[in-house]
Amino acid sequence: MIKTTITKEEINTLELSQYEGKVVVIDRKESVPSAIQEIRQHKIVGFDSESKPVFVKGGYNPTALVQIAIPNKVFLFRVNKIGFVDGIKELMESKTITKLGIGLHDDLVDLRKSFQLNPNGFADLNEMVGKTEIQVKGVRKLAGLLLNIRISKGAQTSDWAAKVLTSKQIRYAATDAWVCTAIYAALQQKGYV
Image (cartoon, rainbow, N blue to C red; front, side):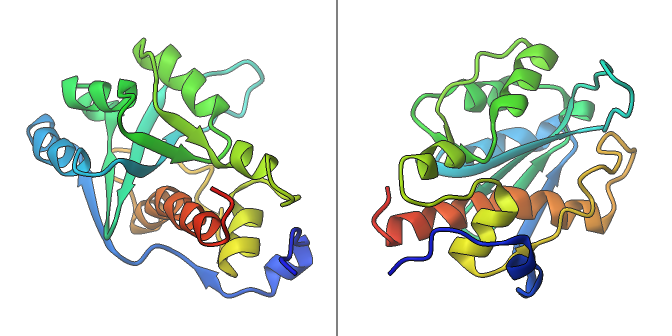
């Protein structure tokens, strides 16, 4: 029988894990074309985005970072520094490359608002599991249930628009994109997608 739920207490007993592979931070426009060319070689990629947190009701900060995971590499695009140059914009609007994420609604609203994009080709893992007997949603619970690992959310509310990202921020951001592809692979293995 396949386990369909996991408690917070069960998650807390799991081994803490993060993405340990190659991470490429893109903070210069000149670096974008080669990264996009590499990403375009894949039909399915992991996706996440980060913004500087807002602690005031009604406050807003534009998307600062876009994370894209491919097998064995994660690209971190510092869009607060380089903007949505053509390659990134085309990737976000592409219908031919599936961008997997978790709880994508706010990410897509922010992309539209921050950069006047028309996002296409996005697939929300929460919606995918909602069509199965799996009874949990969210990155921590899905990673715990399907991958048997615990993902730290410690850097979530850090300053993503900072002049320089810390190594903790870089690993956190890379993990959030990578884990989407790992969860999708686990769903495929179990015959859900």
